[in-house]
Image (cartoon, rainbow, N blue to C red; front, top):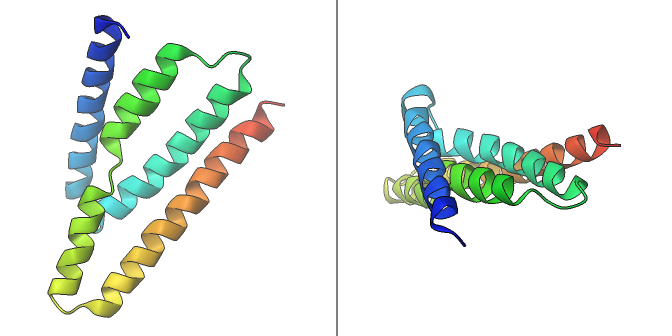
Length: 120
């Protein structure tokens, strides 16, 4: 690992984190929106990276680990879920948890297989 690569990952992670923060202003359920979109993007990025003979080192670290790692997080999801539970909105908590996991899994599969199909 080089210092330059670490700095690029750091900057990309910061950019992803700021974009994630902005989703708080644009969405009623920001973590759900971010996790689904982030899952779609990381699925596509992963599909693209492994479709190459040798996965691009810079792309994998900067885009996937840095930007998308800063953009997507389940820590905010967990806090939102806890707040629904704490406010006795149990059905909403269950609904939110199921939608977050199911839609993110679906999105990562769509992103991955879309790139796999397009790479043929």
